[in-house]
Image (cartoon, rainbow, N blue to C red; front, side, top):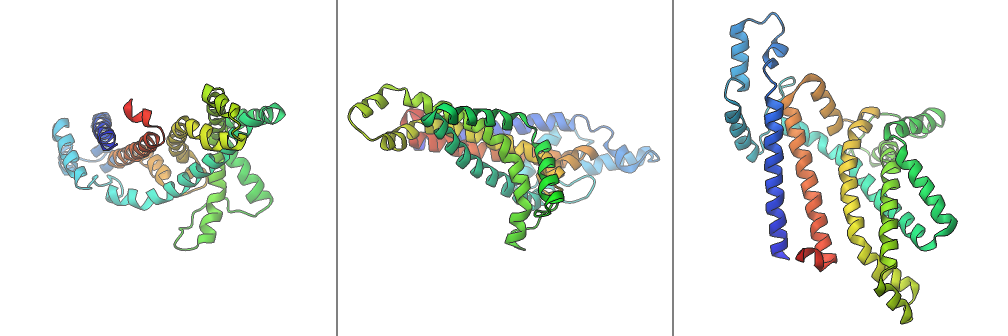
Length: 313
């Protein structure tokens, strides 16, 4: 098991380095007009040269990459070109906001999708058809459209939930929960649809295996066959789906945060993209890559613990 984890750690480290390097080269290769954008059209050539030297843009691109990588290893992701705020601090202030929304959405997605998927696989008939229709409908609806519909109904019409804004958990747990209900629901509706379909397919595949028929022939109760044997074997594809849903929800959070005016990584990313704030964009990309790598590593370890064949492969 330790060798298995070691191999995964090495692969994750290489992935982070490669993606960070490629992103840096792509992002910083188009920064020739940054000084002009910051100082304005009236800036003199001397002022532009001084600004480029201040930002380190006068050095070769590979030298800039080496300096950035060395600083990043010490937790320094640079300074925002437009707000002069340290990128690490900007991300640290907004990351908990995004994670609170995404983690809640993933947890609810797991609970609902497993329940719906197992029910559709075991019961079949009209329940299976209804769940499949609802899953397809939920998957087809854009999450930003769902968010707007929820705002109109629950905030404008009923007035029971806030339409925008965010309150930190430390300030008011009740207000924090109320502020996250609609954003999380907007994310869960779409993610649950696809996850439920995947869980349904995995459970059906396992229930058709020979060992399940053998267990039933030996008189094992259907409940024991399902919960002690079938679900354990169907857990691997289900965990893979949840890891993919986490990645998808991180991407969906960018739009949802903008709709609900939530000060998370999504809002930070959009503002930085509109301004051309490359250090912030670089920091956000690296942070998201590290998050995705950590989640995939955890899923790999759990999958290896559940099914030893995964460790062998």
